[in-house]
Amino acid sequence: MKAQNGFTLVELMVVISIMAILSSLTFWGFSSWHTKNGLEAAAKDIYSLLVQARNDASNTNTAHQINFSSTQAQRVAVDLNGDADTTDEGEAAITFDYSNTSYTISGATNVTFDRRGLANVDNQTIRINTSVSGISPAVDCIVVHFTRINMGKWEGGNCVPQ
Image (cartoon, rainbow, N blue to C red; front, side, top):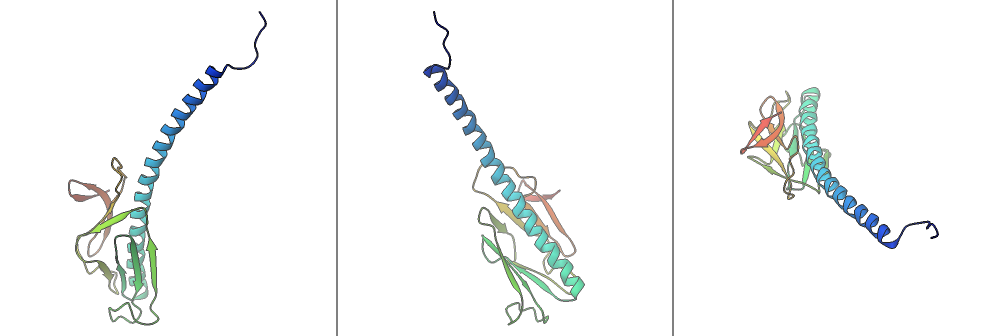
């Protein structure tokens, strides 16, 4: 009998099936990782905005306010004349959008840091949410106190500092 070179159709179909199964498992894992990473990034970005506003308020001796205007965007506004109104002409406002996440805020929808960098709220919790089940990010909440800002993990209805 003559030696055969190459693969049979059955062997080729088995290899293609195994590759399809492995690639679907990899895609599922990547999708979960991507969502988890997005939640952590949103929490860290919001935390950075809060810390920067607090530092800028004390460094420039000017009140800084962060407005959480909806469940999808944050409006960061700077009060330049100290009248606690950030809608005056010439005052800066920047909007950041996190389209893959939403957040829940307990209490007021804005945080104002006075000229000394002290917040106008105490124990205000910002929780980062997702509609995807089974995702457990390392950090997914922020608590703003008068003198400090903490990132944490949401457990049992509370934000536990990390």
